[in-house]
Image 1 (cartoon, rainbow, N blue to C red):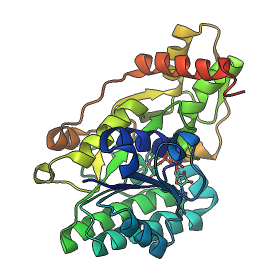
Image 2: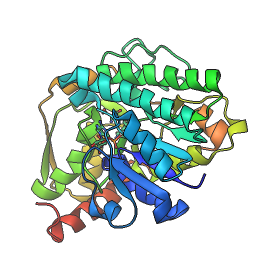
Image 3: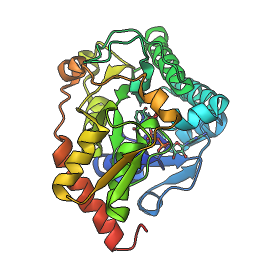
Length: 320
Ligand code: NAD
Ligand code: SER
């Protein structure tokens, strides 16, 4: 692949993945797009265009203009916002995705990567070490769109012999861009509030345990799958991808190792009901076998790094 289109580049993952892709493929060869203006790190280092994923013809024009041969689609409405605006989630996550697949089919795009999520699982799914092949009966509109998106991806692979790849990301934790309205956002907010206030009020209970991953592992794994040898892939749109798994209380205890005065309290809201339907931990052996996935960060290593970077931003006045 030579010219990569990133759709939804201005979000939590896109902000960092776009730059990681530019490091590999060259700044001018990674065309960043989003519905909204992107951070200056993206707009000042390479091509950026405003693109609504729902505008199929503009997407096609951009693909032709830049001679695109690979697409990374990150545009989505996440779980918590999706429960507030279910029709928006359906529209962006489904009609947007089908635009990507249709343009990619018509324009002979070599590889498309579009993430799925642990939100594909539901209360009837085995919660511990959740298998690759299992019950997919989610309770959120976001989860429903992710299951349908996986099926749609595999349909285009089978029917049109396309190369579509997807990962079921766990909650992603990072310090560069804020998360965009998901249930796992508490796992980022806890670090910001630890630095800003020395305390955090969690919107899920102390024993809520979800699969999580630190951004450097997310970037490494995503690029690994994007570049994996097609012949080695038995799965396509739905790879389970795990790294670590911990409760909010365990996160708080990890922060206390570096900030003994840190305090945590709990005021669960509607996001508790979403979290309760998602797994505790993930069996990602298919990803490990088919494209060599492995993770590096555990909870304490991530906590140390998150606190260091957020404190630096705070000290520089970049966050208040
Ligand atoms: P985000 O909400 O931070 O970013 C999404 C981006 O999509 C935003 O910049 C937004 O402006 C853009 N967008 C929204 N509507 C659009 C539209 N109509 N046209 C074009 N762009 C639009 O999300 P993220 O965390 O970066 O997630 C990226 C992908 O990873 C999504 O598919 C998401 O479902 C998946 N995922 C994320 C996580 C996580 O914890 N961050 C976990 C599982 C899966
Ligand atoms: N982090 C995402 C969310 O909470 C999981 O897909 O919505």
